Image (cartoon, rainbow, N blue to C red):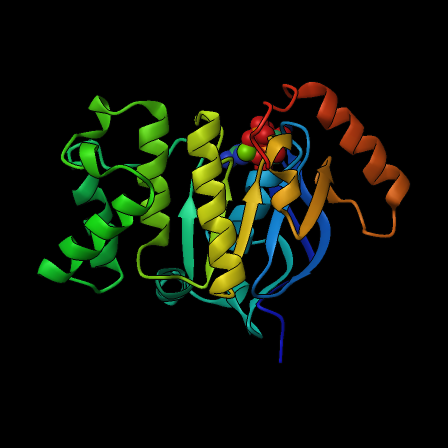
Length: 252
Ligand SMILES: Nc1ncnc2c1ncn2[C@@H]1O[C@H](COP(=O)(O)OP(=O)(O)OP(=O)(O)O)[C@@H](O)[C@H]1O
Ligand SMILES: [Mg+2]
């Protein structure tokens, strides 16, 4: 059985060949399987979001291959890719990406529609998802009338729509208070444990490290290898010193 996601020697260069060239992801190798809760850490600008977008087929590698269950998605055409993304992947972006003209429940419904769930069924499922993230009371509000944390919870509900086997999240707890953050992480953890899905999350939040099955570290576009414990340790300390201390009772 091929791994759920596999990156072989993946490099992504922005503005290649120009004076503003950036090697955002540099020769990364990675294999990840279902049922894992993986956290990716690293300093700002180290390439985390770029790696997440490569994993989800939102960005093509400059070189190397990205495979999903043995299918090389980095080779798929722009016509074939959306199908894979719709079926297999739920995204929680930095900045949420909500439709401003749609209410919370309509935002979730719209995502369900894209995943081919329609009409009353979509409305029903959207309500259940919003209940899961504790947003029932605010579901008829527009994004502009929601707080940052509430918007983030709508984004989480959207990512869960259609039950994708892979959930990719870019700092999903950044705008949340301790209690809501714990609820959301608990929910994602449960999905990986009980439903055998992959949750791959970028985070600076050291309060959630205890939830992880695996913690990956990125620096300067490179993924530190599992074997390189000394480098991982150094980076971990550096990250820890740059984030707020844990809030008591958060990761119990
Ligand atoms: N569209 C783009 N065009 C050019 N350069 C980019 C683009 N997106 C990102 N970069 C550059 O690539 C590098 C990696 O960016 P990326 O967004 O992946 O970092 P990150 O680890 O997610 O950072 P942060 O923690 O601040 O979100 C950075 O130097 C960034 O400036
Ligand atoms: Mg980022």
